[in-house]
Amino acid sequence: MVNRLACYLLILSTITLLSTNYGLAQNPLILDQFTSDPTARVFEGKVYVYPSHDILAKPGQGRPGWFCMEDYHVFSSENLTDWTDHGVIVNQNDVNWIDPNSYSMWAPDCVCKDGKYYFYFPSSAKPRGRRIGVAIADRPDGPFKPEAKPIEGVRGIDPCVLIDKDGKAYLYYSLNRIFVARLKDNMLELDSEPQVIGNLPTKGLLEGPFVFERNGIYYLTYPHVQNKIERLEYSIGDNPMGPFEPKGVIMDESPSGCWTNHHSIVEYQGQWYLFYHDKDLSPDFDKNRSIRVDYLYFNDDATIQKVIPTLRGVGITNARKEIQIDRYSAISQEGASVSFLNDENKHEGWKTILTTRDAWVQYNQVDFGDKQVDSVKVKASSATGGTIALRLDAIDGPLIVQVEVPQNTDWNVVSVTLSEIPFGIQDLVVVLTDASNVEIDWVRFEYKDIES
Image (cartoon, rainbow, N blue to C red; front, side, top):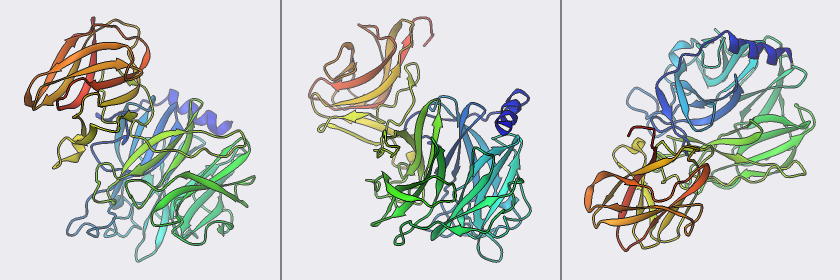
C-alpha cells in the first residue's frame, strides 16, 4: 500500500510534458516507427508501453539482415485508442557498459517502487556477454538515468520484474532457459542466487518471460518455438519462484510467419489485455516489428483463453476521427481486401479495396456520441465510379447513408449529408452496392456544431 501511495502522490506533484507524436487505436498501435517486445504497465491512471525500437541496420550500424536496436521510447494512453510518444528514454550511447557496436537494446521492463521508476533493459556488454542494466526516473516517461554498472550476477536478456503483494521484488530473465532471483529493496542488486525455473520446455527457443499475479495464482508466460516460430505459452504456480505447471498456449504461431512474438499482460480498468508484436509494417522482413494489443480473458478455472490476433485491436474509436476501416473487425470472403497506401513508405498505412457487389468490411465500436451527426466524409478513389452504403451493426443493418464515389483514380474526399442519425457506440459496416471498384482510405463523421 505504501508503494502504491507513493506512486499516486507523485501524480499530484508532477506535470508530464508530452510530445506531439500520436498513434491510433488499431493494430499496429504505432505507425511512424518500428516497435517490438512491448511491456505494458499501469502508472498514474494510464497504460504505459515500453517496447524495443527496431531500426534498419546499415554500414557501421548493426548487422545487416538482423535485429538492430539502439534506444527505447515509451508510449502512453488513457483510453488505449490515442497513444502519445514521449520520445527516447534510454540510448545505448548513454550507457557506459554497453558495447556501442552491438545495437542490442532488447526487450525491457519498468516497475514503480517507493515513488521511483526502475527501467530494466538488456544489452551486449563490453568486452562481451549479455547483461541487464537499470535506469531510474521520478516519472514513468523519464528522464531516466542509467546506473553505471549492470546487475551483478545476472547473465541474460528479456528482464521482467514482479513486485509481489508483500513488496518483495523478483527478477525473471532468459538465456536459453528462464531464471528467477529475488531483488534487494534497492531494486538494483540480487537478494538470492539465480535459479533455473524447471518443468518448462527443454527443446526450442525459450525466452521473454513475463510474470503476473491474479487471485493468488502466479502466471509465468513466455514465447517458445515449439515448431518453427514462436508462440506464446504459460505455466502457473502458487509461489513467485515456482514451481510452475505448464498449462497451454496463449497465442498460436503468427499467420504472418513472424519469427518472434514477445508480449506482456496487464489489467486496466477491469479488463485484461495482451500486448504483443507482429510484422505489420514490414511483411518481408521480420526483424522490423510493430506492437499490437488484443483483449485477454480467463476461464472460470483460472486458465487463459487463447487470444486470436486481430487488426481492429481494442478501444473505442471516436466517430469524428478518421476511421481506418482497413483495420477491420470482419471482412467478406470475396471482393474485399487490404493493401498498403504506398509500397515505398509502408508507414503511411493501408487502404480498403472493394471490387465485388455486396463486398463489405465491418469496423466495431465506433462512438457516435449523443450529439446529432450531420454528415460523413469518405476519402476514396475509383477507376470506375461506384456506390458504397454505410450501415450499422450488420451488412443488412440500418442504412445511415449511401456515398457516390466519383470516377477518379486520385484520392477524393466525398462529403454527404446523412439520411439517418446514429447515436452511441455502434459497429460500422461499409458495403459496395454495385459492380464497381472502390478504394477507401478513411471514413469520418461530423457533427452539426463542429466546423468541417
